[in-house]
Length: 249
Image (cartoon, rainbow, N blue to C red):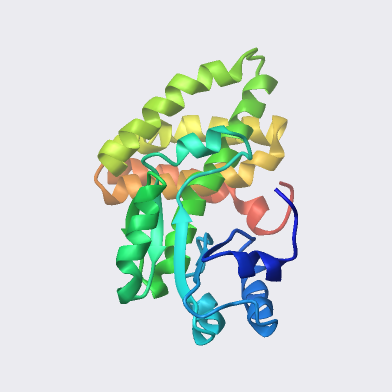
């Protein structure tokens, strides 16, 4: 396929797909409109999770038909990406008169439309980043620590555990919480923090943040006994003193 200028791409297309980083999208849309590349009646679709239709307002004024179709999937740039679209949810924001068109496009790609209000797009995208992007960082750090502990195949060790934990969480939410924090084993948590400070100080802040979040959720949902929560939260609070003062990490 020949490489051509954006203006020529739009001139040849009835449907234009904009797949650029979130922060680049507003400038791209404005630039395309300013050059006269956007035509009345042209479907202009972006795949940003953060943005809805507001970012396409300049194109709408030029007569284009705006759609926000965000595939809720992580992509690798390999052929497997296309296969992963099958059954994938799409966060869709569209004008009322274009909802049928948006739904048809998503279904044609093998996806499932999920309607997201314009004002809810940033929260929707934050939720996805929290669940997926941060998960990658957590798993990578866990594998790193297991190697430090002498485990030869941390991926093989974590695979079944994480698969079960994810399945349980999707089925049961907070009721799936397990481990020393949810049980209120403050001694074990203190030992974890001590080991991390000695062998992986860069991991302490993340461990403490997630442990506090886990404790709060376990306590709220009645999984963590109040009498055990006090000691646990004392450990988590005192363990984080250096981090809160900007000291050793």
